[in-house]
Length: 224
Image (cartoon, rainbow, N blue to C red):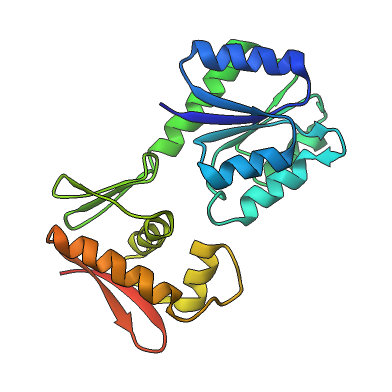
């Protein structure tokens, strides 16, 4: 079941959105400010975000910039729901990375149509495969020969990054930035310990892919 987060300070509009999502059988959470939205994202990733722009003491565009600047959230579909109706407002929102822009007041059927459209397009990109391993980005499940393996959050993100770049040497600094969301280089064994754990789990189910250490550089994922 797709999970949708929406940020809206107007209770009457939030009620309409809640009823719409509930009737469509979506899992959802409502937030009235950016702080609570990002706290929730740290705990569980949504499949789509509905974003209001005109918030008390906040600019929704700043939240959009933050979402797009973070490697963990840069690809989450974002639909802006705003009372700002000018062409310029729409262009700015779309140029900053929104996937769609719907002006208020809106019809619930149109809202559902746009949500389903974005979820459908996003889902098409959500399965990564190499050899006998399958990684589902939406469900965060990894399987080898139909056997599901359990990974920690960071292990999943690291394996996903490697699967997105098969046969390419990924520099340690790049891995830190993409998986840990920071330009700061963490303790040197942080990546090593995560790779060691992933290798062990892959070997338990006889995976035919291997994470190769490129000395003094980083790692490379190859099919055996």
